[in-house]
Structures are given as C-alpha cells and as structure tokens.
Length: 461
Image 1 (spheres, rainbow, N blue to C red):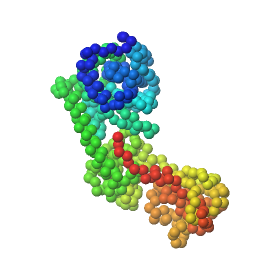
Image 2: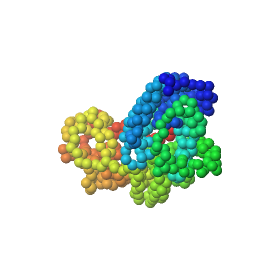
Image 3: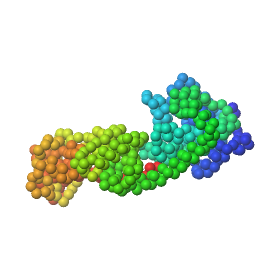
Image 4: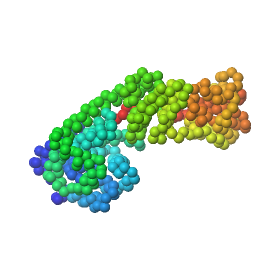
C-alpha cells in the first residue's frame, strides 16, 4: 500500500462518497471525527473515505475485545495500515465481562470509545443499511415497541452518566452493503474478516446467513424498505415523546406520579408514561408485564393499601393518591452519637441537614454539646410546635401523610436526655417544651435535598 491513500476519479463517483460529502456539509469546516474501526470492510472503508474527504480531521479507534486468538494480530495489522496512510490510530484493549457475549462486548466497547473521545470530536460508527434492517427485525422479534423499532438514527446526541453529552454519527445507514463493497475495493481492498461473523449461534449472524437470503429472494428491496420503516418509527417516537412529556408534567416528576392525573389518561398513555417513569436512567426498559403489574396493582389498590412492585433495584409503591419510584434498599434510622457544629452538614436518612438561624431557635450553646439521634421505638409522645397538647408521634406522622417507608427514617434528637425535636422528610418538628431564644438555631433541610425531591423530567434526546 502507498504511504498515503490516493484517490481516483472512480472514488468521487461512488454513491457512498457522494453520501458522505452531502452529510459532511452539516458540520463545521473544522469538525473532528473519531471513527470506531474494527478493521472490517465497512468501518475501514468509512475511516479511509473520511480521511480522504477531510484529511487531518479524522482519528481511528480500534477496541480489542481480546475474545479471539488473533485479536492482537488484527490490532497490530490495523495500526500498521493506518501508519502507512498517515491516519492517527488508537488501539484500546478491553476486558469483556461474562454473560451475554454480544451485549457485554457492545457495552464495554462503547464505554471505551466514549473515554477516548475528545471534546471536539464526533464519534463515527460504520452501521449500514443492512445493519439497520437487521436491528429492526431483531427488535420486532423481541417484542419492542415504537422506540425499539426506531432502531438507529443517522445522528443522535447521547447523555452519559458523567453528564457529558456526545454526538454519534452513522453516515452509512442509507448505504447498501454492495455500494460499500465497491468503495472498499477501490481504497482498502485488504481488511480483517472476523470468523465470528460466520458463527450462527449469534442471533444476528443466524439472521444474516439463514433468514436474510430467503427473505431477499422474495423481497429484494427489503433492506431499504425496513430502513424506511425505521425512519417512520423515529418520527412516531418523536410525536409520542412530545405527548409523553405533556402527560409527565401533568402527572408528576421522576420520583412521584399522581394517581388521579394518571387515571385521566387512556390506557396506552398510562403504559407509555409508566414505562419511561419506571425505567428512569436504566439502560433498558422494564418488561411489558411489569408495567402492567404497576398499572393494575398500584393504580387500582385500595387507598389504605400499600402494595409494592420491585424491578432492577427499584421499588414502586403506592401511598394515598400517589405512586412512588424508590430505591429497593432505603436507608433506615439508627441510633447515633454525634457532634454537630454550626457549619457542618449532617447526612441522615431523611436528608441533609444544617443549622440555620431563625426568628426563634435553640441557643448557640446547644450546638456545642453531643447529641443522641434515636430511631423510633414506638409509643413516643411529644408536644409538636403549633399543635395543642401532647400527641403520639405515630399519630402525628400518619396525619402529616408521611409515607410508611419515610416513617422508618424518622429520628429523634436528644441533648442531655431532653427531646429537642424530630427529623422527618417534611422537616424538623420542634418539641415545643424546649426553651427558645430570638435569633436562635434550628435544623433545616439543605436546598440540595429539597431540589432532589422536586426533580423534574427532562426531554429525552
């Protein structure tokens, strides 16, 4: 191979080249690209073509999954080719966890690619028309809804757990395998042929080898037809997303939904909202039967019942006219001996607390002594500020409509055997028997705790 890639008139006449040129116009003139490249025909021809169309703006990233004996040899071969073409190349070995090999390899591959991505780069992927059609077909067989059948987008913005936002670009989605093969013959006739592509124990390989030839013999244009279906599904998903956000804002937030508002929606809209609400930030949505279990069990339960559905480390519970999305393992109250000076934030199951000066509060000396935080034992009686007489704490919590799981987080604050008050998720309940002074101090939930409870849904990108 020559030291740098050379182009011929045939290269500029290729349908793939014309597609790439047209799509490149959407980006700024100096946009940088990181091409995920296995070394196979599709991704390698894409990397080479982009290198020819915008030299100096392309890097190649090869993720070595180390799952096959020649994987290191393939990585070295690709590195040599890229060096000859003066195309920057990064080789990144990764370890694939046990389990579903395809899913785990894909997961670790994307994690590695996102780490390699620089701030000014777009991640470019080599998925083509048949890949899209296969994805749509497999998702249909797995019972996916509109979102799943939307398959892959040519361009999408993805929000990572770190908060970073990245752009993924799949410029070959409208390109046929035949056209990519013709391009590869011109600019990179040598490429890696992974034998895993012939192992039909993988669903996609079985579909490609056993099912696809039969279907295409009957419907030759099925790749482009299924791609059109994916695009139409993407439009439908956008419309559904707009409806979803309207319903979500009317019914609640990420943590709580109002049952009366939910009941005003049709059953399909209830299912759509519950599906996305239950999923939260998880990668995969809950199964249909779980969504139905939440819808039928929690929405239709008696008002005084406290049913619960669990999924993926989350629990979904009903209390009064609300349903709640909660971690499966919630912190519970414990007995603690603490020093709590003025500026220190105290982390408790009920939230984050800090001393704050109020019109009336405890004198400064109170904060200078050790405190006992005690979980409820049962039978506690106190004179809650603003309420006449002494009342059982249990009755006060019930009348304040504090959910049962939050009652297990309540802690009583003692100083020198004197009950100062009670920490609840609604705030600090002062024991009115304690002497107060002007400009004194009281425990207050920090703004970060309050903001977390009032978290609003964000539009899905």
